[in-house]
Length: 443
Image (cartoon, rainbow, N blue to C red):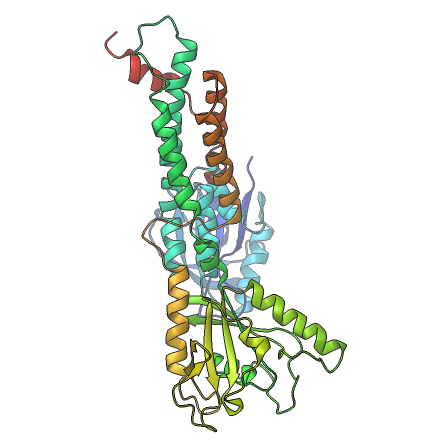
């Protein structure tokens, strides 16, 4: 018998409400053992007294819900116990469940795994459940919800259905050469495969938007020692995340904070000050890490000291490019006039007083939205999606140049399997029904 599993479904710790979920064939028996009463009607919230089945000791007055298979999250019989969220209450109920026959504690992610195995979710929807739990910004929430509702899986299933139909055309030419089929049946698949390869190329050419939205856009603050980088990080983070000192070279390692900019997640990194002659080997390593982080960042914030006008740090100037927001700091000390750093227009700010910070946040938000905002189509969100799509696209390109129908069919089959791995549907569908529907109706 499949074991019945249980676990705390809400965050551990003290709370107003805690939910313990039980899923499996004896979940109803477990509820009956805790209440000593007949089971409540499915999907009907019921207030009951929970007791330890062995001692009869009262554990809690809880709101319970029962879901019968297959109409539940996991596709199995499910019971949810909505408890008062004290640690002692939760511990008592979990301990009581652990003594019941046929029950065991769920492994991490096992409820979602059972939902997938029972056909309630495909793999992209299962991944979206985790993304929704981890979402910290509104954009992350929207992307996870859309994927959990099946938008991404539906896109890939639609592509796979087109591949299946094309494969049926090719297989018809191979398997039924003597039948009265329309001429050029397999040739009709070529424009479909070519169009699909182009669509996959366009889907892949998204600058990693979905992955970046999940993980956060990386912004590196760079500049010379004492330009005010750490002060600027603290001002943007609205907390003392980095040590600020008048002593040059205070920041030695990369310091990161996670921010929400206009609903988009960003990882803002303060780096060591750039200068040619480092004071010691530790600062030298810090500079190396700063340059490495700048090279890998999606956006750079180049900070210059307004008190150094008209001289500007050449090491920082060398990093300026189209992905850089230029900042002229300490404008509370020196009037900046028209804030220009060479040919680059700068945002005049004072990290100490906060002057100019709203404009800097607006520019950073615009940079972030440009890189993370979507066009309406669902975005691929994981490296495994990208790898499978590249494999599918490459197989389609081979199919279009295959010298024999048999080779063409094999590459289309490989392309279909690559798409199937994304959603968890790895078996190629039975082609006979498609062939019959397309070529044999009325004959």
